[in-house]
Structure formats: C-alpha cells, structure tokens
Length: 542
Ligand code: G16
Image 1: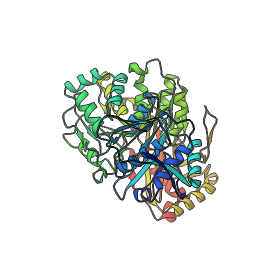
Image 2: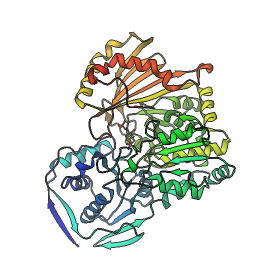
Image 3: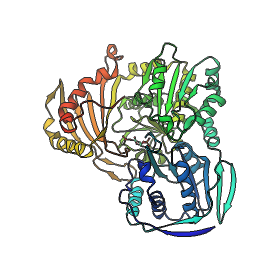
Image 4: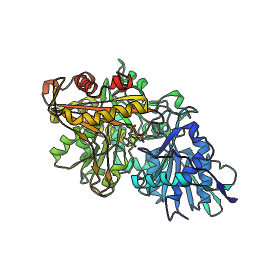
C-alpha cells in the first residue's frame, strides 16, 4: 500500500452551512471535490495521528463511493483506527454515540439529512467532534477557509474495502474496524428508557406505525421497536434504506410524510405514528387523528422528563432555537428552570449540553435531543414518547391537550417558501430589514406591532457571537420570525415561523393553520413577498 500526494485545484464553493457541506450529487462528483473537502477537514485539525475516526452515512446515493475515498484519505493522513458502520451505514445519532463511546478523535458523517437523494438529489458531509457534536462555527469557518487554498491531498493506492463484513483489517499502521451499525445505539437506548414498560404497552395491544421513509432508520426501528420492544410486526414501513429513498423526500413533516399522515387520519388509524428523516436525527409524532407540533413535543418531553429515571435529579434547563414556538418556556417557568433561546443549528446547543446548563433541547424543524448525545436524535425522541405513554397510560392527544389546559396553547406553524430565486429573496429581506422599525406601533390586520429586530446571539458559555440570525416581529401575544434556510443546495428557501398564545380554555382546540392565518396575512403585507418573488403561497406548511 503506497501513500500518494495528489495535486488538486481548490473549489470556491465549499462553505459549510447549518450542518456541514451540502450540495447536489453532481457537484460532489466533480474531480477531487469530495477529496478536497475531506483533506480540508483534516488540515483544520491537529493531533489526530494514531487516533480513531468514526465514519458512516445515511446510505444515500454516492455514500458507498464517498466512503471508499474517505477511508483512503484517512489512512494516508495516519489515523490509527477507522470505525465504520457495516455497509457504510450509521445514523447521525448512532455515529455521535460511537464517537463518544469509543473515545474517537471525531467522525465524518455522510448525509444531506432530510434533502432528497439519488443521482439528481443532494449529498453532504459533516464533521463531528470528539464530543459527538457538530463542528462548531469557528471550526467550520477554518475548514471553509482551508478549502479555498488547498493544492494537494494524500491518499493511498489500495483496493476498495469490503464494508459488509464485521471485523478488523490492518492497512499499514491503520486498523479498519467494521461494526454493526445498530448494536451500540440500541443498547444505549435501553439504558435510558424503561423497555419493560414499553414492552408491556405493546403486549396490551397498543398499536403503532413508524415510517422510515426508505432512509437510514429502517433497520434501527425494526431492531428496536419490533424485535426488542415487541411492537406489531411490520409496523415499520418503508424500512429498507434506498439510495434514492424510493423517490421520497425524507423529511418528517405533514407535507412530505403524507403516507404516514394519511394512515394516521384514516378510520382504522393506530394509536401512535412516527417518522424520521434521512439520517435519523429528526422525528414527527402523531396520535390517532392528531398531530403534535415539534414545539409541543419538546414541552411534553420536558413536562415528563423527571419521570424517566435517566433524567431524574438531572433537570438543569432546556434550550430551544429562537424560531421554535415557546411552549416549553411555560413548562420551565412552572418548574423554576431556565430556558435558552439559540440560533437555528444544533451546534448552538453543544456548549449548553456539555456544561450541563440544559438537559433537553429542541427545534421547530422536528429535532429534539438531550445530554445523552450532542446530536438530535429521532428514535430517542420516539422512545421518550412511548415511555411517557407507557408510564401515564394516556394517549398522544390527551397528553397534548392536558399540556394546553395547564399552560395555555402556543399555536404555531412553520411555512416554507422553497425554490425561491436567491437574488429576489435577498432583495425582499433587505427591504424588509430597512422597513422593520417603521412597523412599530402600527396596527396590521388587527395586530399591534410592539417590537421588531434582528436576532443576535452571544453563547452564554463560550461568549462567541452569532450575528444576523433572523428577523422578528413581535405583536400582541404573537410573533413572526423569518430566516433563510441554511440546508438547501440550490436557490433559496425562506422559512416563516408563526406563533400565537391562547389561554382561554374554550379556544384551545382550533385547527392550528386556520388559527394562524391572520398572522400569515400580516407577513404577506409586511414582506410584500408576492411582489418580490411572484410567490403567494408557501410550499410546505406544518
Ligand atoms: C439542520 C440542523 C438543525 C437545524 C436545521 C435547519 O438540520 O442540524 O439544527 O434546525 O438544519 O434547517 P434550515 O436551515 O433548512 O431551516 P438537519 O436535520 O438538516 O441536519
């Protein structure tokens, strides 16, 4: 096996977004594009020689090919051990867990998360630190900088590795260890939740469907829900990870998880429905003809966390991203615990998790997590719900409606305008920014604007600052928040987040989208979105 130095030219577009580098597969397939980025990651790190690197991905198109290149570059860069999920598969939370459990230097996860896959779809790479956490902003900035000047990378002349066989092989001074992708993660979940109680729930006839959306969590869900917990056979649907997700858009929300939603609203709907995304870090919860918003889900996990032994005596506080509706704030107030509002992006939770300022965290984009891992974790959240249901004997709907009765309901909706022309979207936001102060004190569609601004953040642990993290408009008892998505691979996606709190007990069970509609009208008037982009309606509403 020979180590070779390969000359290369830099690409100028390797800028890390909300979670790593995400681009079309065709972009990643350009000569040396992937290799440049991987070497740029290693060029941004020090002291990894002889250390362990975890590698895995969500199995999407180009995963298998990319892993072989990464293995060769990692060996040439003198990592001591590469731990790779069997067949190159690891969900994002499972990779995060392996990094910590095996005391790895870090990990490379191949995924474009919830973005569609296949030859015309998206691919992505992200780096996780030794804490199993997404690379912080200062590191991703360095990686992006290094990628602009890279002129060579190291690789090895060696045949591709057979990733299907569990076990170890040596290459020079590097050991390659292929591991079962599910074992460690499943065992870890068993230490967090009361599997016996969940097993009894299913034995007593509780019904469930889980939609893996042909993405990475299928095998995890089969093992954990069906085999270990005795959930109904074949309750895991779209269970085989496919390179193109079978044409599905693996984003668990009311629009893209339509197959699951239809089943959960059918006359013979089961008690519980759930789905995850491409790489297994997001989740959606449905009851029988009932949808739980991500903000309510975080509030309910917080309400019941101290009933789960793993969290007893360890409730420190909770963080939510700023766009996330603030239902959890009222639960925390009652428990006399702090809440932190961070910018969008899981990496902003890391310092809070690592320093035990928070126990749980969550986002409106269907991600929740806790100090058990520094990544969001879809299957964990679903197990958390099952554990609460097993302990309380209450349905999804009852648990949610009880939350509303106790604390008031924070109606909320995220509405995304996907595929906008980037220039048009930017113009619209530039004008909006200029106009923001002039709205204060005005009445728009029956709401008085009380405050407007740009969200700026200082990390309470590290003191690092994040600027211009979105625009907010506060109205009486309501809020509109706007930002551009950081996870798309082409054009621009504008996300508009609405919330309005209701405490009148006779007004708690309206249809959320209908209730929010007057606020949507405020957004349309304030932004002039139609005039700037030609788009009147969002493409995704949750
Ligand atoms: C990533 C981050 C999340 C964040 C989301 C925002 O999710 O990990 O923390 O909420 O992006 O997406 P957008 O910028 O499109 O609104 P994921 O699941 O794509 O890794």
